Image (cartoon, rainbow over all chains, first blue to last red; front, top):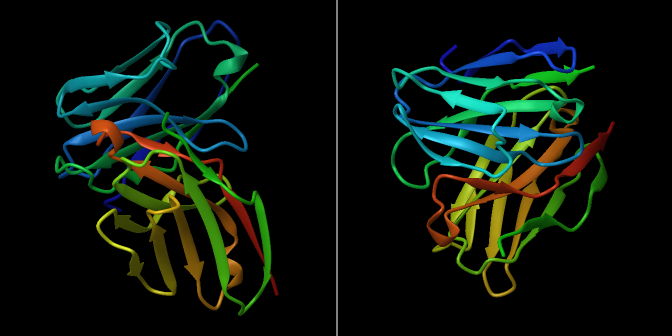
Length: 114
Length: 114
């Protein structure tokens, strides 16, 4: 399978715990994006990387959130001191570096904070 | 400001009928649009895209129409099948130089009755 993959697919945690999600983009794609989706809503942009550089962060990304893409390949999204409001689907997407190219999404990681 | 929205939250059709899903956008600078299909528990799946220099684009059983005058986008699905049942999102990319960020609407739930 050469699509975007995400791990884990589901995560249940207690409030206050830290969680980390991983995304592996399509191999030839330089751009990687994180989105968050809550029930009944469309995905909302969180951040994106061009290779290893994080070029944009949404206001939705509070200081408890951090994303990395250390070698310009896979990316991790960490949430520290999780809150119940962090419960959502976290989606990763990738695209070639050409402007306005289609973003291809992974299956998402569904987070439930108890 | 930027916004992408949908006229109808739900659409129910009979198998074999044609489906039309509508989307309105408010930013006249939007120049690239994508339709995604999202099945329950999965990430958004690319269906078709269209650039602002086009009025119509056809794929396999799907057609996207763009009316820039009224800032309206539609997705037509021919001979709708039960497997087409999903939430459909339109997304906008590229307005105001934000060619890295997709802005999604809320989505339309399409139900295909056998």
